[in-house]
Length: 386
Image (cartoon, rainbow, N blue to C red; front, side, top):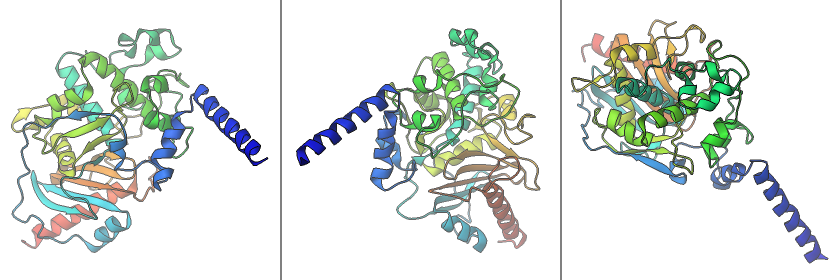
C-alpha cells in the first residue's frame, strides 16, 4: 500500500513538473532553488555566482584619489542608524572628485562584487549614448522595428522607439512585480531565455504617452544594442566605460542561457566602480580629461520627462523638487549611486534591504534622506574648518 501511494505521488509530481515546463513555468524551479532552498525570500546582492555571465574586463585600473580627510570623519548619528537598520554593506562619499568616506559592514570590503540590480538600467542608457556616438545607432529616436522588423507588424510596435524604451514610456503589457513567482520579472531573472520572456509580450497602450517603470523595456533596449554593436554588451561596456573610467576591478554581467546580458539588471561590481559611474555623470560624460559619452546625451539622461512628472530621465531617477537636487541610479533592495551636482557629490550605498517608502512620484524617500544627510554633514565639516 505504501509503495502504491509513493508511486502515485511520484507520478503526480512528475506530471506537475512536466506540465509546468509545457506552460513555460519551468523557471520557477530555478527561482525556488536559488531563493527558498538557500533560506532567502527573493533575489540577493550575492547571487550573481549562480548565473551564466559575461566578464567586463578592467585593464587600466586607476584607484580613487583620497581626500586629505579620508575616513577621519564620523557619519551623523541619524544616518549611521539608518544605514545599519537597513542592512547597508557599503557607503561611499566622493567630494570634489576625491574619496572622502568609505565604510563597509559585515564580511564586505572594497573588493566585494555585489549585484547592481536595476542600476544596470542606467548603464544600459549610457551604452545607448556610446552606440550613438559610434554611429552604430542613428539616435534614440530610431524605431525599434529597424532592429527587429517583426515589430512593424505588431499593434503599436511600429511606433516604438529606443527613446520610449529608455524613458519607460514603452506601453508594454508588463507588470513590474518582484516577489510573485509568476511575474515577467521573475521569469526574466531566473529563466533560460530573455528573448522568450520579452519578445512574446504585446502592448497595452501606445508608446511615448505614459510613464510606467518596466524592466522589459530596458531588456528590449538591450537587444537592440546587442544587435547594433555586434558583440556581447559586457565587452562593449568594458570598451566604452570600464576602461576609459579606469575601473579598479573587473566586473561581470549576468546573462540568460544564450549569453544575452540581462540589461534590466545584474551587473556584479565593486562599490568604488559604481561611484565612478556617478562621477562620469557629474563630469558631464568626461573622465581623465576625455569625453567618454557625449555631453548633450548626458544632459538628456538627467533631464526629467514630462510623462514621469519630472521623476525619470534616461535610465535614471531624478529629484529636482527639493533643495538638494539630485539624480540617481537605483536598484532593487536599495542599491544607489546618487549625484548631487550643486555640491559636487557622489554617494554610493549598497545593501540587502532598505526603507521602501516612496513619495508621490514613486521615488524612494531614502534617496532624499541620504542626500540631505550627507550635504548637511559635508557643509558642517567645511563650516567648522575641519
